[in-house]
Length: 134
Image (cartoon, rainbow, N blue to C red; front, side, top):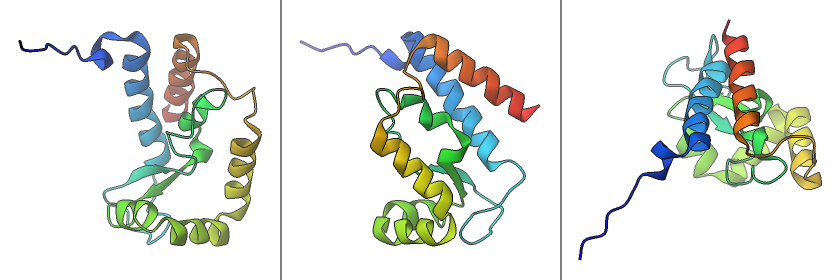
């Protein structure tokens, strides 16, 4: 017997909004800028300092906070930030120490005022991100 799988991402209103918010935060972080490491202006993507996997529970909405993303080019994103995590953390401490420290404190404290994964919260994030884009 074949199993039929439904793509929950397409039918869940929160997942649909997350997809839209993910695309918007990338546009916000990567607009009018270059790679934070090598200064290449091409092939940019926002790299999460506090990973999306860590952004759960009371700090869920940190995944959409522009302070939590760093624009990286395709040559620095995966090879450096993902595959050389120890070197990446050293680079962050040396080049973005204040922001890195602030985000690590938020992650450690699990602050309750950052926001939960609700349809209302994600709609508000989308509104704010659209405002950033003008």
